[in-house]
Length: 162
Image (cartoon, rainbow, N blue to C red):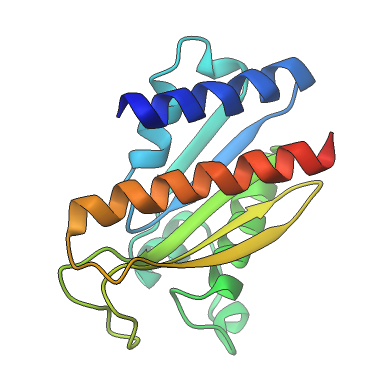
């Protein structure tokens, strides 16, 4: 985790300096994004909160995403990641939101995505979504790759918004 802590600390310092806030919705990272962020002293200055939205039931219950909003969207897509990022950002009133959804492994998900597939989105003054494909079935390794990609995307968006 030290490698990710460096990135989380960099993101946190930028947010703190700009007096901006962040919320997180994660799935296959299982809380790793939030854990990295709150491991940095002073995280309460920018990290408002987050949730592990691992299933549609969690998305409905924690983010209050109605069935109608999911009519043309399936999980583990960039559109789904953006929906969750926008929703948690609005719900928690943050400047930025980071969202991740995917299949960490060792098998793929029920939607046909292979292990090592994740979609990551940032919602804020800059919005972006990316897809990550590791081609690996190692669950923990994929979680770390997804987290690194998420923090990198957030850093990129913060830089563009500066």
